[in-house]
Length: 353
Image (spheres, rainbow, N blue to C red):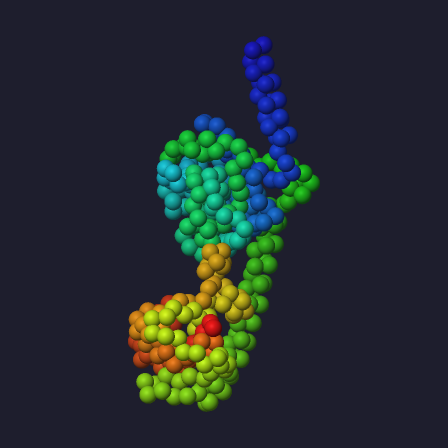
């Protein structure tokens, strides 16, 4: 009789806890220390939630054959626990090197922040390296904003998160759907369709970027023919003049910039819209609000490549110009990220008034 009453109490407690949940999608992480309940942001980050849910339910279309048809997370460990930081799990190898057989893109949402305990976020080793590993925070970790996709939040059981130790086992992950929208969310189909859309969008962006590259090269040829040559070897073409006010020595100025190879390839910019048009927008950088003008202490000879510094020193506040920089005043024989060795460069600069 006591066993029956205990079982009945357990069932009714679970039912009651679920009735308290608002419409949405949830994941229960069941451990020996208790259950952690998280709400999943399937509207804000559909690809990431679809990935997690499909793995948890054993319906993921892209996993390695050995994981097909199996609840992926059941029996895995929290393999990495750092006190006053976070707990990390989801690695089939249990050492931080495992993955499910594929990688997928980031879904950085600027309004979602690592702003306190209980943030559920994807672990990765850089852009577009998401797989199955995730972490849950103990405290706010704002330095991770823009670098990791937040896809949920603990709504019950933060004390369990705080009690988890390294190698504690995730006995199972239960997905709970409350409300019609959550119930019609098909994780496997959403993952596949979103991945296909991303692929098509990337192909379109490549075509647009190639077209913009050709247009930029044509413009550079035109401007360089009209540009003023300087003794050092740089050339400069001012497309818009300001009020003619020269910054004073030591004055801090700000300027928007865009750096191109001579063939019209954009390799870096602080202008978010331009980066997006050319297909080089970095979601992490965007999420961190790091598409910003550069600061320069006028007269300082360090900090930038020589040709860039010389060009800035010729300009006034409010000027917009293209600086044509020969390789010896750029990075010379060094390759630098997307910039090949011995590259002539073109920089657009817009000096703030």
